[in-house]
Image (cartoon, rainbow, N blue to C red; front, top):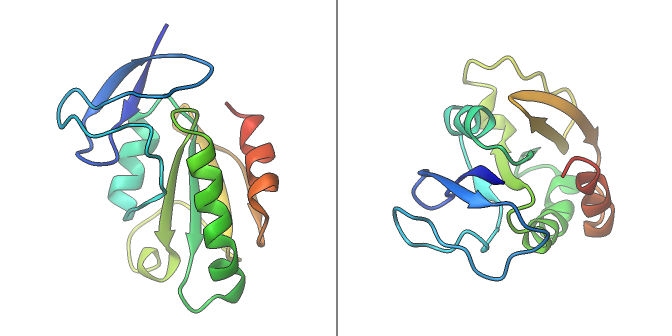
Length: 142
């Protein structure tokens, strides 16, 4: 079975064989690694593209640079992303920038981490969490 995955480097859609784990997988268009899974900073238009295109769960951290808990959680979010290549796609949205854009996603408190699957938000949490807590939370949607 293959799944659609958006390349975080060139945004091309790739069809990737679904496996339990990945050691090497490359984008068919730009040949960049798809397993280097650092969170990608995106705007709302690119976020919408990932949500509507990727068949992986899309995990989104809404944060702001002035938010202490957001800054504290950032390395934990990155660690979780790196631990789960091609199991989920991890994105970050600066909530200050997002507030100036038209969005139907309502964020009241940050950090807020949302999971989207099949084009819909299916869960969220607010407040800082450790990488282990984030991984455990994401695994239920993989």
